[in-house]
Image (cartoon, rainbow, N blue to C red; front, side):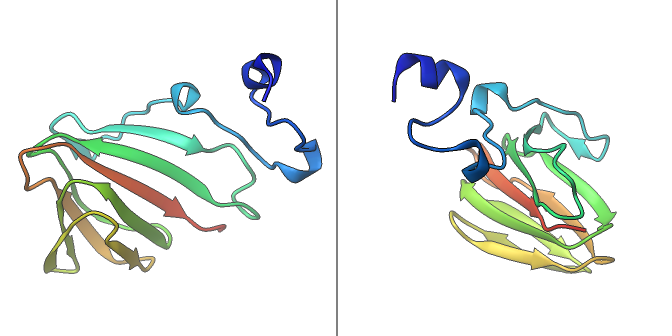
Length: 130
């Protein structure tokens, strides 16, 4: 890949028709969720693409003790722990998740998250098309 391609955010040999979206980590906007506590740092990796036809993807970094309060889910969601450990409670049932553990949560279920470890936990949040 040339320096010009890298600066433009494109891969050499990939046509515009072959890439729906490309977001570099440093360009992924951080956002604030009022339901997060303890310094959770979420970033929108894919957002602004038509939610009726394309997925939404965010990555949140949970410092030790940080979490997300119990909240009913407005849509289906998939969580994948990329690093660290989180305790998830869904509809009153808790389980601990570690690296690469994945959980799918149905619309309407109530979930709560907390980092129960002494290191940062990284959570990938995937929302399918509406």
